[in-house]
Length: 382
View 1 (tube, rainbow, N blue to C red):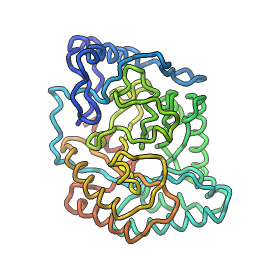
View 2 (spheres, helix red, strand yellow):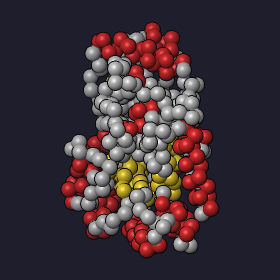
View 3 (tube, rainbow, N blue to C red):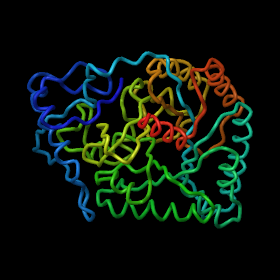
View 4 (cartoon, rainbow, N blue to C red):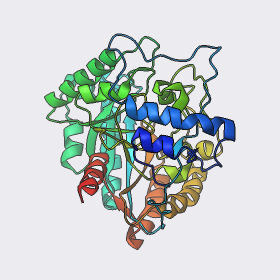
């Protein structure tokens, strides 16, 4: 399902009967709720230039607030036809290189560098491209004189940032931007110009923070990031997540809505595609080693073992993602992998064989996150 571009406020008011639809493809909200949506949309268009204050997080509703939540996506307009299922799915594996002491423990870093090279060897046998979103391993490369990240980039994979910034209640635009800027600077010492990030979900205006830090693309957005929205724009599925781990479920909620990138102007309206937005959002894909749990509604922040059941879950999910593509659009999807403990390489090879079957059919193409973003931006000028 395509995401509707921002429409002038006057038009939204004139056609107030056009309700927003959920990211899960549910029916529009009931009449009383839908009646309030044009006002929220008009505010989004009229107030898009306003951003959160640098020194404070975005406002969040108190316990007594009753702002009606709206579904996750605007309803499709007549000019936007249903997806034809005939598009090419640009695909990668996003590895989150975080949660380990690689900057402080040389043995840990050496082990992870060895694993990373081994996985790269296997992936390259299939022409597969990894997207590495890094954290502690950056410091490890600097401290232990082994630039495995630059090596991965030179081998055709991509290197960006997993910030883990913005999850605390006192996070601000400034604090998120400073974290991202520092991580970009450290990667620059390794010869890497990072322009994309994950781990930025926040109550504060994380979109503006990314732009100020020179980040032009975000991936792996989770539900905790819905906090930054204006209350009237929060989808019906939103709940007051206590922290990023509590709100670690993927957004958009429905698998079929995760193949269409969009542009975000600010944190207050980021679920709406805005032609003036500078930040490209590549919607969350599906966990590699947590696929079964995620598809059954048990998704969480914990790492689970990659098993045969996950491969079977992917065998069901990939055709669904491909069916949601459109031949006239740039379509993206990716596997999310929390890297650390070793996985069974025979199982990993079996999973790569599964994906390779669709590659050979022409319905899937390996592309890194920055390559996907570049394709999407180019499509906007065609």
